[in-house]
Length: 485
Image (cartoon, rainbow, N blue to C red):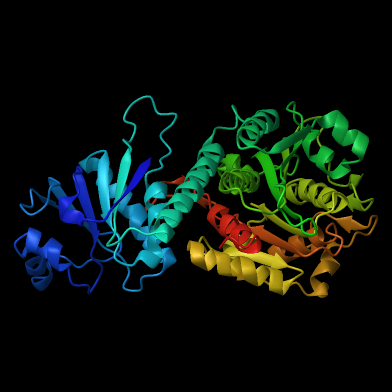
């Protein structure tokens, strides 16, 4: 999408449709109200316009505007990065029926970035595989602001990069599993990473076996499609040599549950079980495009979890990369296995900080729904920085406890650990305590995005399918860590 600034006011923007936010209880801008001969004020007075979230109204041929249409878009009374993002996404989804060239008035320039991000996000769709009736898209956005400034221009540019990365993650996650197995995802990551200027390395199943990735290989052994581990590294010359952040993503390209087979309905959306890997891939692309002065490496742990005569069995014991043995009690608790080896590999490669993202547990959806992502950590100060970045991005996280008592159900009777607890209590936390055994004390954050990574239904501000949650937060967090916030 082409984005330009316009400082002469919405009435002079030569576009197909001019969009103005007019939230619940807000008075219309004088210039816009005058352009409609006071019609907007009349609509508010007569309560024909409420301006609530999800509401929009098109006014045709306002004589005081160059644009042939004026669209009013509602929003929450509290205007913050999250509500601004959602209203802008709604604006894009509503305005697309008015043409390909849209203007958007921004009164509070402090919210320029989330507003532009939201608009680009809302312009994304999941119609790639439809042969007819594909939703049109907006080609250009004119941002109407009162004054041109370097900060606004920077915010717009960063918004474009981070929102396009988010939409890239959504597109990858939405790909059907018959066309995106571990090898195909590794090839895609290699192509995208190389084009972004990163160093890329891929471990095939033979290399994984040589190095001792026993847990990762166990997950992939039931599928005809072999597992892969992808490393993408961004190492600018001016980066701090003492800090090396690792982003680790779970990439189960399809999760049948293995021999602990899921029900048919549970499997319907399991192409999104690689959302953690797609999230980290997208964040890395943006980090490279922004040329952030910090060493960052992503590890994408890719496998397909299928039932077959060669699949791992309940009762099997496997040895992870760091030497710990793990008894398999439930083959549907596979994500933590590929992450275990990837986390241990990050430690071996010299990670000073680690963040992993995974659609890891159904329990996180029970606890937090689709509102907050679960966050678990061994370093509260490190986690506080990510939560702050999430607030700026309009994405929410809830930190769950990590008391040592929660590890007890994950200790094995015949091995060091088991991959599933004997009961259903605190499933998100016990899974995180399992992962903690592979980070070697390095400051670490685990993001369980199972509840927030997939939208079951269309909403005013987004289509159903992958949400790209956490991509924008991670980008902002790395910006802050690198001193570029």
